Length: 90
Image (cartoon, rainbow, N blue to C red):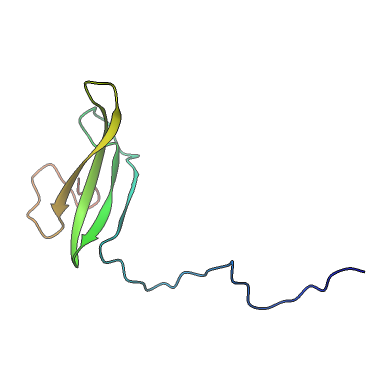
C-alpha cells in the first residue's frame, strides 16, 4: 500500500518575506568589476547597529602561509572620494 501524499504545511520549507530585519547582518559578493590587483576581491553591504556600511574584502595570505580575508567598512553616508561612482561605490 502506498503512503498518502498530503499537500499543505511543510516545516522544512521556509519562504523569506520581502521585508526582514537586517540589523547586524550583511553580505559579501565576488567583485565582478575587479580590474586591478589592489581592488577588493569581494564587496557588499552590512548593517551595524542600524547604520549602513559598504564592506570590501581582500583575499590575503599571512607570512606563515595561512589564508584569510581582510575587511574594510565605509559608512554609506560618508563623502565619496573622486574615484568612486554611485554604480561602484567601492
